[in-house]
Length: 112
Length: 116
Image (cartoon, rainbow over all chains, first blue to last red; front, side, top):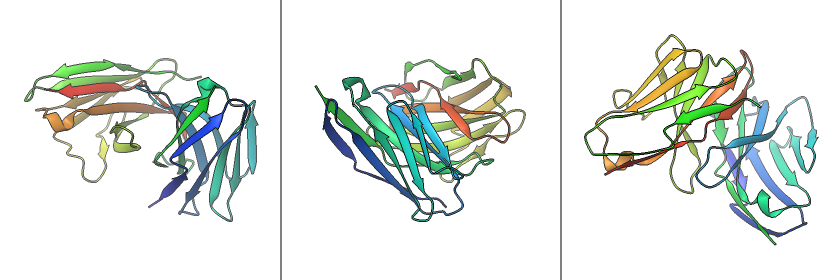
């Protein structure tokens, strides 16, 4: 099955700086890669996703890149703000399938 | 965006009793819903897939007789933890798949279960 690894496990950045989280996946058939943000005591929220026919996708301060050859994808948050502090999860799976495999999560702390 | 609602958000029950958690898709029909369990500072573990009108599909190692899942309508799935024990205490999260053939998944707010 799919195995997703996520790094780093914790990330502390100064407000205004960028944050980058990287994930690798094992199943070359995976073609859907969502990112979720989870605040303490709440369910994960989808923040951005990318499909394998696209190499990069951007939504305001958030961008995701995908390298299918290397089987890795990354989340980039620019101009970080304190409200960006949360746990971020990457996931990988197949479109038209229902199973997503999740990374272990990255705790992001934005220092004011 | 799509909204998935869970109830209750927190519940405390006594050992040996059963507790039901509801998951509703508020503004869309979800033929497939998912139930996850999450331990503190850990990732999400898929427990089972709830299919409207049919039996749930459980992941390996998940006891189907202990975690009863019912998906009676296109907007509601329930998870019942039967004969609860303290080790069942956890954060339970549901999610719903938006659209047939699509893989956009939205999560509920989660339910904290404490078994005393």
